[in-house]
Length: 241
Ligand SMILES: *Cc1c(COP(=O)(O)O)cnc(C)c1O
Image 1 (spheres, rainbow, N blue to C red):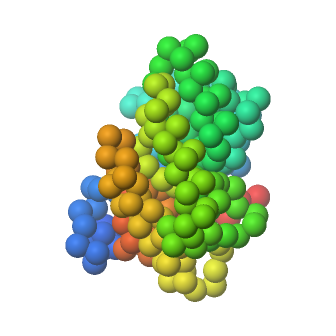
Image 2: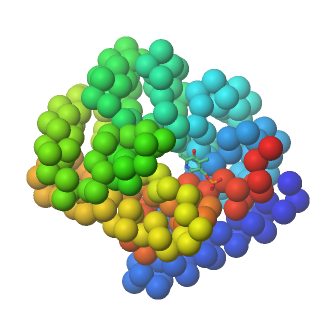
């Protein structure tokens, strides 16, 4: 736990250096500290070191942590980054500031309905699987926008999602496959950015600003390709148990 402030400072430096190399401003990039498997004391140490955004991938695991840290000032923003089961959608809509892992029209419709009942607008990202890796959740778009047939299907769903009144689409999220050479993930990130650029053109009334891509092993390449949100766990908190 005593290493956390130094690790966070180092990640911020690496984010800033990657941004400058790409001709971008470091402030364009939000660091989400992925706190899954870690308890409130560890998370408090990260908040004390300036972390503002936290990522969790399971609703049940996150709920007690969000409650335990509810009185923190300033209050952290909580991002749901893991697959969301429909029967947990209501709790997710109540607890999270943003759901990054919306991966079907059906889930979007359920979240929209719950958000209406709760009386809020819920920011979301659409998770897209551009790598084609079978283990990854997300709308299927292996190969990106060059995959015309898959893109047509996805587009039909997206037109309906952006029309849902209680959801606020802010962009896209993806998970790159684990690779030995972190640079090897760059084509995956580029495909997500190209998809975003195309959607911004075709659906201009929706905000497509955010690209959530890059984790501990590959966030620098993701920033080079346009990431606005990086999700970093192990490089901040150490290996997970
Ligand atoms: C766990 C997780 C991360 C963080 O991964 P690290 O390798 O620990 O940085 C990022 N995104 C998602 C969706 C995750 O599940």
